[in-house]
Length: 269
Image 1 (cartoon, rainbow, N blue to C red):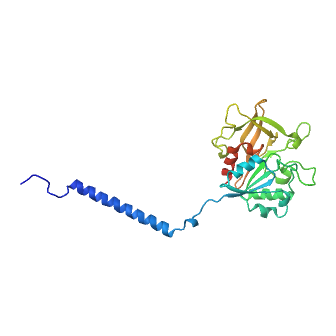
Image 2: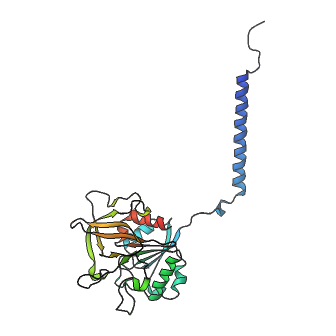
Image 3: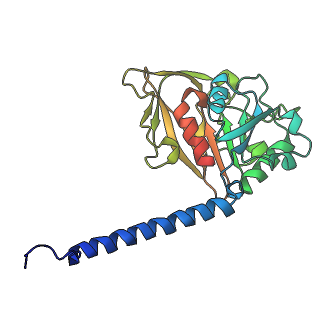
């Protein structure tokens, strides 16, 4: 007899055939499952993270508007005057996830007592507030009120102290021009994530207007600014810590630091 092959597959060949059949079967089952999912599941009904609603009270800078317009997947925003919110301000604020009080591009820094109280209730109830520079320091018809505490209690985490000449530091006449950088103070805060200083370059500086405000109680200093010529420092970003809502104070135009502003919006989302 010849010593050739018997014509039947060897044991190792049988094992390979069985393995191939298992793989083909598994792929077929997976394909059927995927087809069934696409056939019966309405993907439009699955939860998605919608853009947050943001209200800007006052008149903000064009730099801020540019940043917001470039992040339309993150938020939808509206701009209203403080006067338009005097009627039922609490009900109006409830429509928004984030409120920015920014009157830096207008002369008036006034908000009514009703709006101030509504903003405090809004944050204490879980809302998120951004206050820019000296916005909201005055009350209409009350020339004896200057600062935030009279209208918004301790909502803003900085103080409008008196200077040696008895002029309040948050008054428009006390504005300071700084040529320098924003530097990270809180190493772990999400607002400064990936940002050690702004601008990032070793020889670049920002030209900023700011105020020599004092830091209030129950606060967290996130970043500070340093004047390149005098080495004097000022609070740049300060957060009021609370159990529910967040209140963040910017002591400069946040549109000047796009990355920081975008981080802030993500943090408040």
